[in-house]
Amino acid sequence: MTTQYEKAIFAGGCFWCMVHPFDEYPGVISVISGYTGGHVENPSYEQVTTGTTGHTEAVEITYDPTILPYEKLVEIYWQQTDPTDAFGQFADRGDSYRPVIFYTTPEQKEIAEASKQALNESGKFDAPIVTTIEAAEPFYPAEEYHQDYYKKNSFHYSLYREGSGRGKFLRKHWEKEQ
Image (cartoon, rainbow, N blue to C red; front, side, top):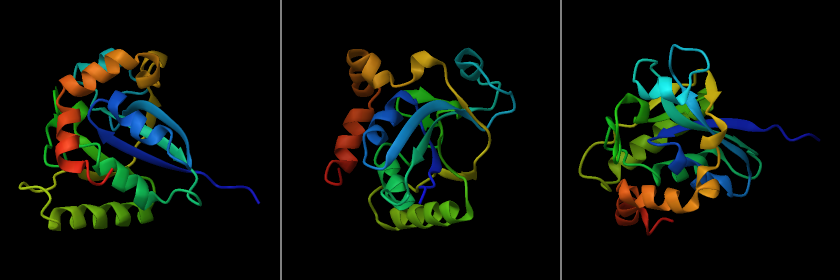
């Protein structure tokens, strides 16, 4: 029997910081940094950062659902973001850094919505959960130098993750769950 892999697409600010949490998780086949949700075909990083293409930095995860259920991917996703900030993530501001769960199936949409509601009702955050849940649009891989950035440039990645405020926020709000 051949395993049918599935895709999950998440946006949570700078895609450099969204690869590592998923990359070596059992059941994850690949994590690709890229752009989605815009109106320009195959945009470049330079185009996306102008804010004129409508794209959001995101990661596309190929995974084996028999090993890793989508529910677990969504749980991992929440623990990488500030779900109360609709205008970007940490030091990165603007639409290209907004938090979004992009669903590829009706089942993914249901799971994401239920998870968002549960997080909202949990009282974990003082502000409402504003991460949007949207239908997936074409995903365009980012340039090669952005792929696996945490491995290729580990020192700079670590400085960026901490300097942006992401590391401190995640430790404060999610450390017990990780």
